[in-house]
Image (cartoon, rainbow, N blue to C red; front, side, top):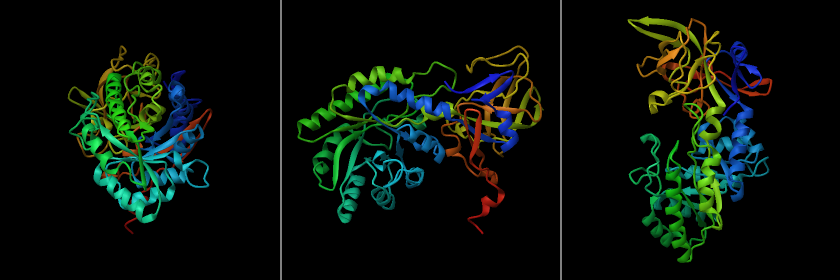
Length: 431
């Protein structure tokens, strides 16, 4: 699952005790495992190898330049959804004459501005994933003015319920994403033979995280019917981007693996004559990172105990935003409290129920609620697991809190890949 393990009563990331990182860098700090990132990417590549897919890592899940480069070195392309993410990909080396081919960038998102479209054309990206007739008409107009040709895939909304959180459900008819299957036919009839935008692909993305593989197979089956109809009408469809959304292990082992997804998806796409694109993000980066915090105070309020730590919703907003579960445990829990699993129901004799909360002035500022935890004292390090995806990238400056540092561990070494912000950074753009 990952390279975060307890040895001799201490939590390690690969060969480095996380306490050593805390001493050197301070807390809160995001810690990523290079070995886990590589391993998770390799598992997807191996599972889907028969299809020879282009695997475009979803930058929105964890967009540090060093993470992007690490995955690009393994062969990954990039999935971006904004001009800022495109800039990150370009800075990481995805540019003309750079280390990685910009043709392996796919640009998704429902609200691409003219500036972002021009930036993407300048960068020489591989595909635009188009969300509406209006966006497609605008892309055609811009490409025509510039006298260039680009490629695009139309995002369809197959109206499939991925059975995930309502905020991250994207494949239902009522969401803002894509066009319904019937409308897609009209889009191709109107725009499918334009010379400046080669509309030769279909894109879908039903949500994240998706545990129900049946939802994928249903969405892909419906989309393949559309592709068959379009081909019979004379349109060239050579690319299918099936999106991302593969799960990570938040509550312990048991989520579908890359092989589980591939076992159901590959047979559907075998022999279809399609270049398949995958957009994994969470499944690569989530278990590859933790948020390490330090206990500031332990507070008793009636029969309730609070561990107040220096990490908060400004570092990890998922618990309050999505009601998301993250396994939380001391980095040095003491004898008799070393966990051998991260199952939601883990318990030991001698634990007590604790809320792990941050210092932000919101009742919603919590990292874990009603958790059985070992005795916790001021100064203890507490790790929040599976925080590599949608952690730092969703951080804020609420309560004027500087952003945390990010650290990458590789074997027995670690390095700071993003320095901790200072108070001066908070006002630098206002001076």
